[in-house]
Length: 387
Image 1 (cartoon, one colour):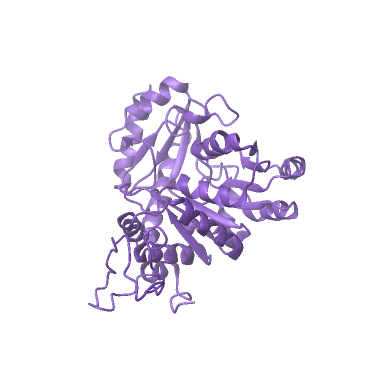
Image 2 (tube, helix red, strand yellow):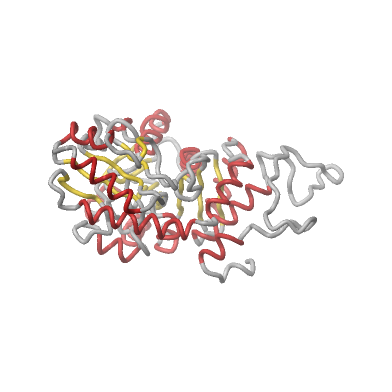
């Protein structure tokens, strides 16, 4: 335990793992690009460092930062969010095992389990996670080893009761994994709510600037951490030092960014709810959202992501997305710039034709840090053009 552990979130985000350089006093630690480390005699390692895949001081610093912010004891930084998920799943699953997953998750996660792990005899069932009786039945029927959930979910912003599901899953002997990418540890801490492990695409809000790909696994389970660490070392999907450093730099401003993302998204959702061209707004901060009260309990704010269903269907959704000017039409989310995404043919194209298919009338907005008046004007002008 370090002297920073008792401090608040932003203090830890800035200082944990970021001790000044002892040689020069540099406030920002140097980025360690070296792939290998000189030994003081055979097997006598300086600080435990031997080879870059096994350990790197810049990556270690990020991992300390991630563990602290999620309230965990172990964190692992990977080359991408899917690499993190892959290592975690290989660490805990064996052929014949089963995964129970929410029916509104990132399409890439579903594709990973269905297409990659499915070939190795891993079963997959998707389910509506707010039906506790159905979850109990599915856990019993499948003997699922892993219960996987996202909250808020992608792209329909469903809110899942982490504590209640953890109790049900643990009673059935299942490991509870929460993808905390949308909420970030600033708004929600799943380990404290009963989850066993948290995963992130650090590409999104943690990095925060759309300039670095990365992923993370965080847990307080020593045995699980040992297994994930072995897979990280043995299969090698580690983040590089510059990627780790960029992610660390992004995390230092996470709190102030999330405050702004949340405030602007809330303003935008409130302004467009009830617009004649909009059939429905999906944002947990709205009282009309079915998960609003639960989100208010397990999150400190409601985040920067919202989706809307256009009354005019697919044609209107496409026209709206392509009619925005401040929002860029692009994959991904969580950066300082606002992005618009058409999940049906972009982020969730891999689940078309499955139970997880996203309506072609849905548009997802990642609300950035621009002036909120400019964002509101942009959305309103594009909606107005729909007639």
